Image (cartoon, rainbow, N blue to C red; front, side, top):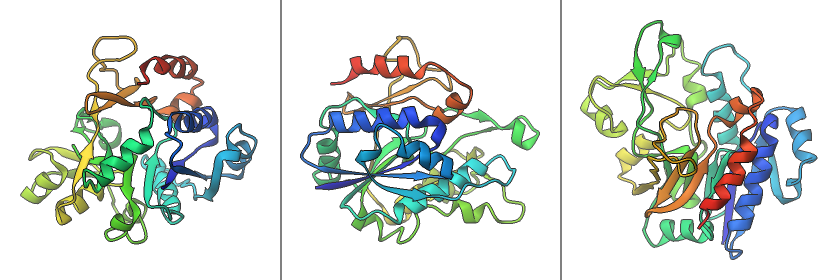
Length: 289
């Protein structure tokens, strides 16, 4: 079977991408063909990619427009462009969309994903948002707490069968870019109806923070799609203790087995010259099963 692996990429994080592709190939079963499709925003990013250690393993590069308008959700618009342009290039039976700082902890992960989508008759499989609230005072001017939709998988790591999902997303996986053009747009929505409550699996009065792929739970709710989400480890699997630091790496489990590690906020850490990635990547080798 062929798997399209779609990765939005930014040049500053080339080290994350190189290690990711190395990790994906090394831990795969070898039974399935992995088609790495990588998006880029600038010519400079493309040139960095072309000189990288993993360029030979990339089947296709895809240009995605970078949003330069000065509003706080501009990165989400750029991410939306990357997601949709990659989606337009998908052709394999199984598609995986992943952030470029996510790594498998499970040997033969590809067979496991195929089995989940086949044998478990699962339409969507991936990573849910965490339950934590974020103070949005910097954006609203008021002390307010918001969070993303709950329980359903999101586009940081999402797997599906293309033929099935094309029924619901024929051309684009998300229209966050179009919605962001509306006059007086805000990505914050108050959960104030029963439909919103059930769709986003949040409580009345909560504030939903819309982002790239906010439509996923809407499609799940409307069409009763079957989905399975990974479970976050409540402990730091490397250092022990509760994993409560907002920007610290995340570890995800499937059927109580280690499945994914997410370095998290990789681009921001790379821009700030954070030097912890090499240690993180070295450490997670001990978690691979």
